Length: 302
Image (cartoon, rainbow, N blue to C red; front, side, top):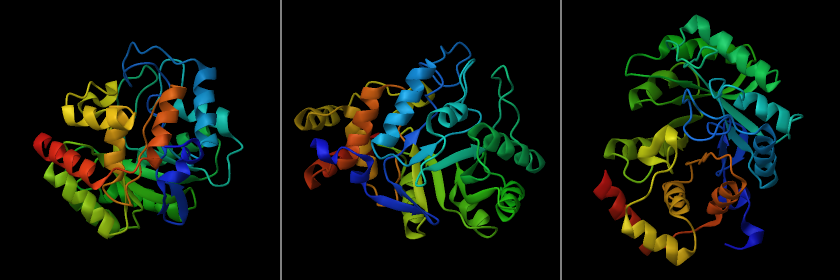
């Protein structure tokens, strides 16, 4: 990977509705704090450091940022950091946010938002980001029940001009079909990475067939989830990483991007060096042999 290719543009592009984004984006979940996201005792990240990371991401060609109003620590809010760092926003920057979950000012989780409460969550994101509309709003759900009422409420806000495009997060295939009968869905944001289940693999494929972007979370963290990446114990991943002169995290991320042109990565970090590595992964092309090896690791771990 040479220096002239180490920008997000090297990852290729995909369209979220009428919005073109580079396939390597940035997730803001880890930005407000050090260590585990949502931890009650999380240490807030230095504001200037967070702002430097965001500005550097855009300099490196990132034009797709994933965030949420419930991404905050005791002193830092991801949306407000984005606003402070990047407003007035570049014309090509797409900010995707999530609604559904909520946290009170002390950080405790609230019950999932009702259809009536979703407008307030949308307005909170608008206020924090300093925007008059949101590019993409993902409805994040818990469970297998119907999304019709909640997604319908967001579809009404889309018709009203507060939202440009709609997506879904943490869903099952039947949720996508249900939502698509109400309004267009431009993306699905679900957990995915090496070791994903056959059902998750199949859903990724179905999204590609329907031209719906698939945006995996925890593709690097894996079982580490909110706490971040854990040590990768697969010797095959370590071997490929050493041969390539990159980290195991980059190999895991590259494998995920190779799962289809509709896959959009949103790795998150508050560290400038990790940011550079994440973006550089977009130019990492794995060989057929390397992919076969990693596919074997994936199937063994599933």
